[in-house]
Length: 308
Ligand code: PSU
Ligand code: MN
Image (cartoon, rainbow, N blue to C red; front, top):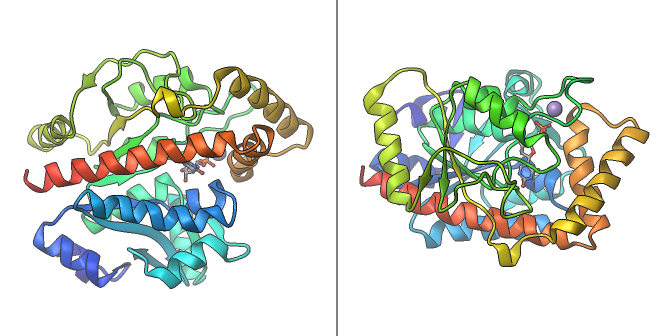
């Protein structure tokens, strides 16, 4: 098994066993824990997400780099490190070899997590909202490495669309150009992360996790470029952030980022935490509702997929 003999990766005993026996496994990212959610709630969430995967009948594999080693599946002590270690790095895929060489520790973004999960033999991954093309891209180029990794990685990522802090139409266009397959789970529009819908139409709608697994089989049967499958799973309307509050506080957050000159890797965490404060925690609840729903669906897809 590549997962157990690959010297660049270290799966936990439980994950290695699940992979070897073909049992369902769901990859979870760690940047959402370290940089996307406030302490101390983030640690509770890290544990809760693993529990949701287990309830669905799959094995959770939270992914991070600890002391230079890419870890696939963390124990309790390691989850605590991700949630609380000061100065933990945010690692995209390009950062992985450097972290390994310098024996550094860091949380992995969607790009790094997708890459490592696929390498370990894990096919299904859940997150909150993907990174994408930032607003104002005509002036200043900022496009998340998430998109490029998904264009060349055979992984199924369940998400509530892309973060609404981004330019959603531009991001959807990039995904189309790069050939990344998207299907909405019981929706005809792309979800808006904190919001049930971004208002942007998507081409394909599916009704069940079994249909997602069927698309995955189709990807493998057809061959071709090793692209991802995005399963867009909206937060329920009842749990979304109030759209009027969302638009007002997001405008403030974007203005504050501009004023304070926040750029690069810092911008996404800055905007997310501004929204948490500016909405008195309501954006956090919507974000968590979205992530929980995605993790549940990912568990169901992994179970459907394990039966092939
Ligand atoms: N989803 C969330 N919260 C997050 C993220 C996703 O609900 O914090 C993280 C993911 O790790 C994603 C990253 O890859 O934000 C995007 O960062 P950037 O825009 O710098 O590529
Ligand atoms: Mn960026």
